[in-house]
Length: 132
Image (cartoon, rainbow, N blue to C red; front, side):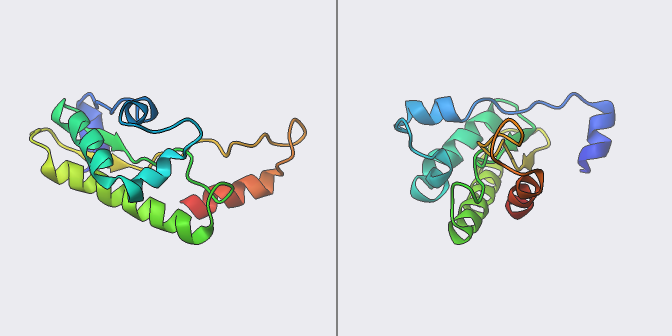
């Protein structure tokens, strides 16, 4: 089913928190949760599946902080690919009968834009472009 058509006539339910759930599963302070897509894929799949099983239509990938300011290009690509695969696997394993979609979660860069910070606007665009 097409998401835009579904949205015209239905309420869409999104997932909930990721970081707080991962902390409950053992994510340590200062640890980058996006790496869990590779190092703890079963935990990520379980997290997403629980939201689908609870009735969510959309699960956001575990990619909120995934960008080239935190990861090399090679690691970034691996993290994003794994995140999408984990969310799709959770969708396929879910017992929920509602329509389901995967959305990529893209958060802030972690740096302030000039003149309040050091990051040029063009560099921020580049950071987001590589993530996408």
